[in-house]
Image (tube, one colour):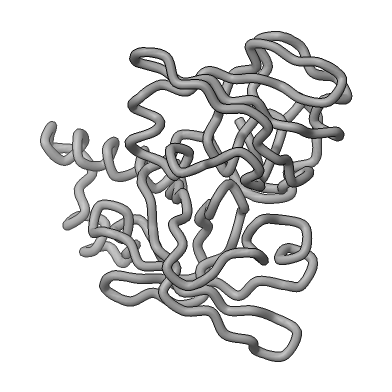
Length: 213
């Protein structure tokens, strides 16, 4: 599990494609401090497993499924990426629950300054937008952000200078693709309520009738 608080920005130093999977090597510093084989590190929000490492970098396998559902397939030598180690038991929970399992990609459609903040508008398909709610949480390239505005096919977030400076988001341009992960709690609630409704238990209609939604 991750929290969406980026620890550092790494740089891709090697990519190798082999059959049904690829290998990616990323130069880093902070996340290597206590790294071990088999550890999980989120790369632009995608949970990857460390298969090799040295004093300056780590390597991870990337399956075709991951490449097709995320922006990792577009990484090149020299590409910068957000890095976060899996949360340690007893660690600070600074963001929200992030699994590192990407739901899909979005596209930045607008960037504008608002005082010290920067607003990013991201378009996404219905499968992702159904779980986006105003003042809720979303992970954008692994960054835990609060949704400020929601439309039918896009959402906007207001980013503080620290976040823009310490992550790859500050380098993004209109038209760039970003990895998106919805709030995992929303997905579980939807599934459980749906199953309960089919079995004659709690339903969305019952919740609405009693003023819960």
